[in-house]
Image (tube, rainbow, N blue to C red; front, side, top):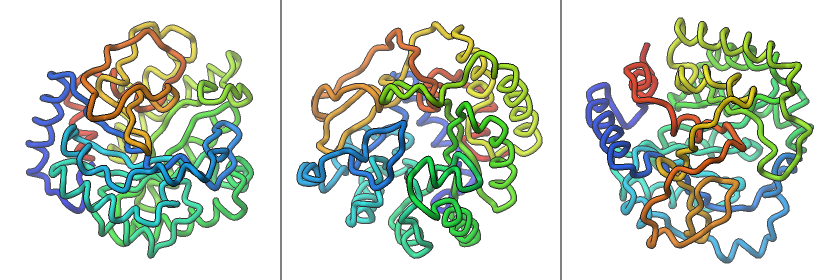
Amino acid sequence: MLSKNYRPWHLIPFAYKYAKLRALRRPVLVHFEVTMRCNAGCDFCDYWKTDPANKARELGSFADAARRFAPMMITFTGGEPLLRKDLEDIIAEVDRAAPFTYLTLITHGGMLSLERAQALWDSGLDQINVSLDYLDERHDTARKIPGLTAKILSVVPQMAARGMTVRFNTVIKDDNIDDVMPIVRHAASVGAGVNLSVYTDFKNGNAAHLIRGGQLARVEALTAELLAYKRRHRGVLSNSDWYIAQIARYLRGEMTEPCRAGETTIHIDPSGHVRRCPDFPVEHHWSEHTRYEPISCNKCYYACRGEAQAPLTLSRFRDLAGKG
């Protein structure tokens, strides 16, 4: 996890901050949804249907919220955050307001040139995450952006060659189970990494991509291969060992413990209002936020939900450091 702004000895204050935030039940990760607008057309998400007039309600700065929460990690997301022409200014302000906070960005990559990536990196980012669910044109079809896959596969190696920390955000779905390991190996071959999540229909009710019971054996084989790969190549997969090991259990419907998303992670929407997770409604302004309690909800197994429940172990700190 450590990148351009940090050195190995900085792991100590990072580890202390992480443990302190968890002990105090304060958010470790805050997502700044800088826009709900999007120029993709994914069938599992409705953000691209957002009224363009919502642009007028987007905050020009998230620095005060960053200073208030002072989490270990902040992710700039959306919608598609690269639609914000002032995104570099937003990131730079947050970087100054929240020192020793790891800053990441999630983008579909459709507008990600090497020059824009460099500008975003120079503004203070520590990691850039690019969504990628397939290594071929199926990804273009899923996102409804022609040429998207070729663009991603071209620009990511160039970003990594410049020293940027880049990860593919890959969602495990019914039709890409056998594509996950090839994506992981490709990421490693170009100096990038991978962060995995599991598909859910919670966002807009589209059950078409759900993993079915008959596919569980393939998923179990995949998770075993992922864990074995991670033991040999720690640093490529950013998910904790615990998260990967629990995927099949979640899909079997055996996960019944309370969800801690909202306690250790929160989302702040473009107008500054807080929601427990990306698929819950907003409730109050960030300045009024105190604490969410864990709830009984097993509608997703996003990485943010799973990692919120992951135990604090030595291997998790090694993941955060990107070390073996």
